[in-house]
Amino acid sequence: DVKVTQSSRYLVKRTGEKVFLECVQDMDHENMFWYRQDPGLGLRLIYFSYDVKMKEKGDIPEGYSVSREKKERFSLILESASTNQTSMYLCASSLGQHQETQYFGPGTRLLVL
Amino acid sequence: QKEVEQNSGPLSVPEGAIASLNCTYSDRGSQSFFWYRQYSGKSPELIMFIYSNGDKEDGRFTAQLNKASQYVSLLIRDSQPSDSATYLCAVFTSGTYKYIFGTGTRLKVLA
Figure 1 (cartoon, chains in turn purple, brown):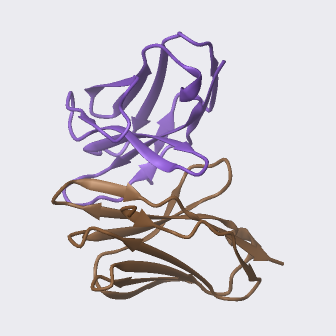
Figure 2: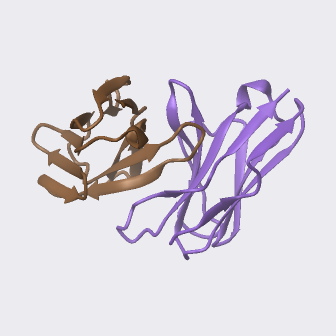
């Protein structure tokens, strides 16, 4: 079974803090993704990566950055957290090579005060 | 027009009935279609995917794809209260390497 883990299930941070969300997958997947999910807006893609050290902006990259130093790990960074970044953050991975099913981690619910 | 559209619901069906969930998409070049189930407070989990026109069955679930009409549907037979969740449709287009999710349909199965 594919296993995607995220570093925290719940996180509370203050405005202006730097926030790191970590995601690890254990199935040697090429592609990794970060989404945020908000009521009524569905899943919105923040960034994705199709290889180590490669990253591509998704639909809403503003205020976020990412890092992929190792194939299994994809980190999302909020440089200076703001209240409008309060959300559920979901990491996903896919094998690539035309196998595009995405497998999701359990999610991190982030509250920025 | 949204790239992937779903009726937000809620869709209410009695226990034992067939639930029919629909999804339309705008990019005629899309090739792969996915259905995910998401329970409240949890992350999406894959139910099934379909690539070719027609029906694909897996247990109580049947996915139907009609590329000419640009819609994909999910049928759940013998619906159970445990099927109550939000169902997300996702569409992948290799030409643009875009994977787009719909906003989901909330299904309520009434005991």
